[in-house]
Length: 415
Image 1 (cartoon, one colour):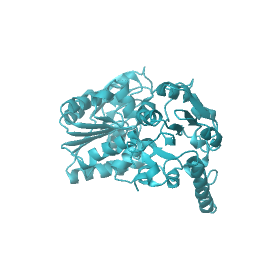
Image 2: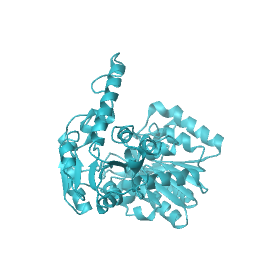
Image 3: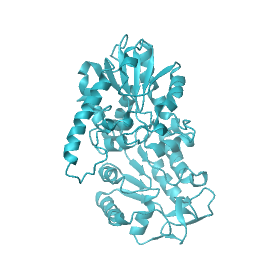
């Protein structure tokens, strides 16, 4: 079933969204991209005369109630975005009466799903090495099914529009779909767009294909880096992982972030790129700071020779130019992860240079996909989100899809 074909009039729809939005210390939303992304799906249901039950997680409360992660904080913002009042169920597993009372056009937001350990389906408070772990795991799987069945009981149909969690086999993203037949479960508009964007990158590659991988750690990106080796023409590695590569080659990196246990891996990546004919582009210079602060003293130094007491904080001018030259010629572009500590304005220049080069390539006909929380925050910060082909709401889900993995949240609906 597709969302366009389904008749929502008089039906109750339970929709899994990803409203795990960033909040400031006062509980105010600092970036509402994810809420805006879900609006086409939510409004479609309401405008057709359906009633809407919204479910999401927020943060990592680890199966316990924690007011810091309560979705009550975003209830009014969701209501403002939808242009109508949103009711709130303070316990997502005890919302049957509130759901039953919903009239066509009304909205109910459930409290954070992850206040229940059953959502993630992992035993709590027991170590994996414990002999009792396997038994606890089986028991939790049964509890997870019961939790998913409860959620499903609130509605006539299920819509998954949470691409950001589609790579997790959680109660609300995959298991709940088992309690609806094929005619009453579907992907939302955002999910459909995300799946199509990944297909664009993987099945319709226009060359040259350039991937830009940033962030602090090689270890978190190794699967995607290795998978991309068979697909890309150019691979730009930037951000904090620059210094692991520099140290692996015998460079001096001062206080820069580094994974000392991944030096051999860094050399292995360089060797594989050479063997596969991939142009691997690493930073040659950086802007170093004498402390991890926006107001640090700075100097431009070689990425291979950072003085003692200083740390690499952003890509330097030569690096920005070499990255931009590669990006400008690309016809397919994937960007995941910043080039520096972009949260500090004084160290956002490298990431901005990447974003501007991607925009230029897009204007010249390239397909550009930006994904992952920090990269999305970058293009939003620089006001360039509408100048790239597609901004993905998913970080881990996007990377796993590009790695070629089946996403449980998609498979649960498409089979």
